[in-house]
Image: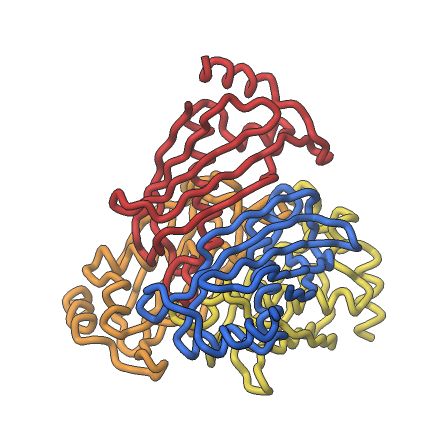
Length: 133
Length: 133
Length: 133
Length: 133
């Protein structure tokens, strides 16, 4: 299992007139978690794209328990539980002071520059094989 | 069953460097569908909030089949299948020229100005009773 | 002078905890005005990009007189006053029921796929020559 | 003169199909600079709002010299040059590795809960008097 932890402060731009963070704001926060997890494991997403591999979201979900407020510092926990083969599933928890605000997941598929499904690059497959032994 | 249809053109701001609409952009489009469905059924969300009722998203999901591109005109189909009691579940389809790009749903709970769970306002309950007979 | 008029409804996602539209939300609305003006004059921006020409914003400004609220229908008036040569300057007015909410402008420069400054495509130069005689 | 420095990493969500950060993404970054500067000077914006004072943007501008890319770490320098009286003017510089990408400013006016212009709260006026002696 791969696990990463990062933090983010809620921006004013991310709130809505309900006075709390807009539900859609959690998706860029999940993305921060994803970016951190891949980077910490030697697979920066920026390099994947530079090499012609893209990881669009094919499936996503989120559940909201408690609202996040402007200027809150949130903790994003990102997890890959199972060795990714064709698809990558990431799970997320968003917490504030140890209290769970939201959970969610995204599933990603590899595509090439033309948008066609493709296998993961060898560097990715190798790294995952090492990490999930 | 309540059903509403609205259209939206993809904004440049809604694309990302993958060259297509960012997955998070679909959430405001779902919201357009929600806003239209409630308004067409005599329950504009703006009036619900003015009366002290709020409908935060407690659960959401989306699945993406095909990408949306800048300046595409998309059709948003929004459906409430079952009479909402404590919670409201809305389902969405996003299409371009009749081709399905994405599906999703959101679940909403009524809260009051203090953020506490509350019953739907009488006007909402009455209207839903009429519409789902 | 070229002039275009389009409308947009304020999305919930575009509001912030001040209860009104976030100031940054006006930029995608300016973009809607730009998209409409170019399309109405036979120069859809989508085709410019397909032909390898990009129009990044190099300069922008906005002044806010009155707030915009969720579900307001806004009118966006977009104007090109002078024939664009190397750069294009667009001016915007955002109104609600004839009342001015905000004004602004953006200045754009042509760049090519590599991000280098370039001349406008001949089709653009010709069209502008016709329109500004 | 008050001066603050903060950093931000460019999110994928903040890019557009031009392959770089959307120009509107700079506004939330300016906001991060503002939030940091006020907090470092003992005037967290969150407390101002809790006390019934709001600081909407009445005027803004930005100039873009070079694009920002996904996952770039940017430095935001925020400055208040003159003691704010009725209005506050903040100036921003966005840099990457010491290279200037963009400059901008925002002007803010104090309003109360009803949206009416108001004087700054005494705590704000006092603090500014101390800081600008």
